[in-house]
Image 1 (tube, rainbow, N blue to C red):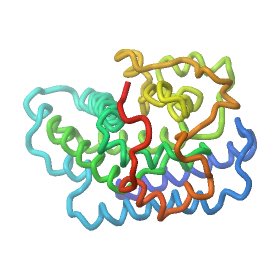
Image 2 (image 1 turned 135 degrees about the horizontal axis):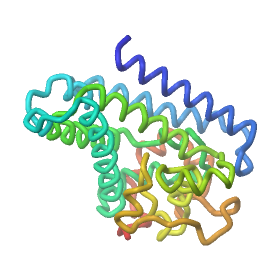
Image 3 (image 1 turned 180 degrees about the vertical axis):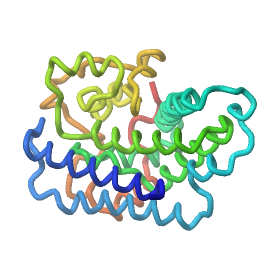
Image 4 (image 1 turned 90 degrees about the horizontal axis):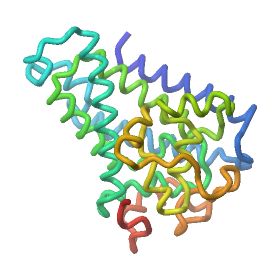
Amino acid sequence: MSSTVVRLLCFVGVLVLMRLWEHLAPFRDPQPHPYRRWGSHLGLVALSTLLSRLIPGLSAVAVASHSQWGLFHHVHLPFSAQVLLTIVILDLAVYGHHVLFHVYPPLWRIHQVHHADPILDTTTGVRFHPLEILLSMAWKMTVVALLGSPVLGVVIYEILLNATALFNHGNVSLPPTWESGIRAFLVTPDWHRLHHSVDIAETNSNYGSIFSLWDRLFGTGREQPQAAPRQMPLGLSSYRDPDSTSRLGWMLTLPFQSPLPEPEQGS
């Protein structure tokens, strides 16, 4: 079975499980009749996938498969250590990439598509403009090439990244007895939900994807929002209409609209 099929099966499986969890135990009142919004989010995924397929070799897994140079080809480490380091370093790289998309205004124009969703659920985890997906892929390819990462490490990281994106954006919450312990190491829905607050200072925090370590290490972590979590306004203050912000055409053209809404500068 190819790595692409494995990743697709994992993605669909986690998406179905998260939707079931959100249906049975939503953290906030769910949006009524959300099907068009879900369709638009999955439409972004389809467009991003199509664009990536039109560019030969645009895949971190492909780079790992053909890499003949890079750090791990010169520093002899056990294979298990190479896999683990690939996962950790890629997650650090994605953290830095995420911060840059908040700090640099032209990149924020693209990334605001993700933040303009005033209703957070697991499908928000795939709500990214195709341009952001292409830039993210190019960045991960560069890191994989510099590391000389093993294919297994890259495949595992991609599966974890997709699964945690669906999990962290879910309209769910862990039991309080689990939350404090897990968020000390991993990003949880309650930890990441703060990143989608309309409060600019909160938006510019909690950037981590898998490990919460990076936010703690670099001082970008916030434990709790100022507002009560169940009532905290989500999204961007410039875009509050759930109907317009869920239209596929609107999301695709948003980076090219003016003026540039907050946050114009990262924290």
